[in-house]
Length: 174
Image (cartoon, rainbow, N blue to C red; front, side, top):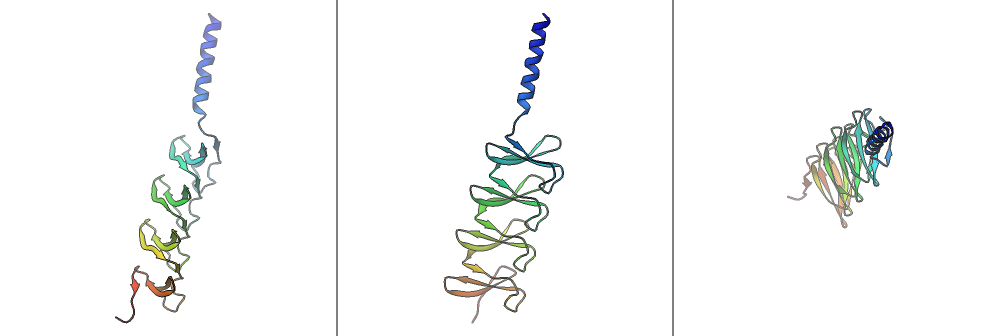
């Protein structure tokens, strides 16, 4: 009888331990910009688990960056199928991964905008994740580089013009 009970208890313990081992890889808490989250990997996809063991971001992304490295402290860059977007410190997707590239906020002379690229064209998103200038330009310069602080030089094909910090194209001769 003792042998049967021992076997039964051992089987329960082994099943419990096996059920708790879920991820292929687990990182180190705090190395991602959030002290109470750890990056986890399952079947080649990344997500986050908090110190309570709760899965706060499901492992669906190919890669997750460090919070704050793109100029917004509460956002982390995520990559899915070679497209980029952002998640926030609540684990919510604030910008779906749709862009080929996303720059760092503030590097083009506008603190709350980041340059984005989609299908070889450039535009801007703001700190709410809203597309403020659609990616329709071949090139976008830095705001203020041409002597007017609220204008940036843009190029489409062989034509050049300006956009302003309101996201409007500046038309000359009207």
